[in-house]
Image (cartoon, rainbow, N blue to C red; front, side):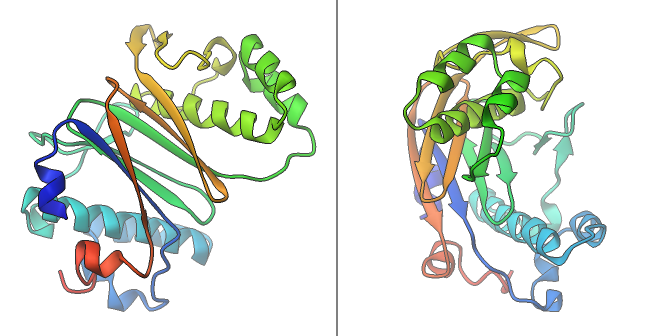
Length: 236
C-alpha cells in the first residue's frame, strides 16, 4: 500500500481516524521523536496527550515507510508560523486533530492544508457566523436548510486555506470568503490561490486546501486496518 502511494504523483491522500492507543506509553514511546515525547508531557489532560501521541505515531510511521527512512533520520522543520515540513522531501503534508478525531493530507503537488471538526450543535450559531464569517458566507448559512452542515463546510475550508498558506488562523476571518472553490486571497500581505473542498464523514467534516485540483482519496484508519496498512506500530 505504501509503495502504491509513493508512486502516485497526481493524487491527494487524506487519512482520518479515531484510532485508540494503549494506555501504557512505554509500549509505544519508542515510536515518537524525543521532541514529541517532551511536548506530549506538557498536556494537562490524558485524552489530549493520547490524541497528540496517536497523531504523531501514525505520521512518523507513515513517513518512515513512504520515504524509506529510520525514525532517527526523520527531521521535521517548521515555517515561520509553525507549519511542519521535511526538507528536500517531495511530499507535502498537513495534520489536524480535534477532540477525538484526527486527519492528515499528503500530496506531491505543493503546499496543502487540512482541518477536521466533529459536528456539534451550537446554542448561538448565528452569533458565531456573524463574528467569523464573510457576509456572503453568513447569507449562505442563513439560507441553508442544514445550517450546522453549512457552518462546518465553511469553517473547515477556511481553516484549511489558512493552514495551506502557512499562516494559520488570523484575526480577519470575515474578510476571507471560501464559497468559491478556487479563490484568490490576500493573507499576510501575500496572494494565495488554492483549490478548496470539504467532505462529511460520519460525525465529522473535513476541509482541504490544495495548490491545484487533483483527485482525492479518503482512507479511514481504525483498529481493523491499522496493522495491515502500516504494520505493527510497536515494531519500528
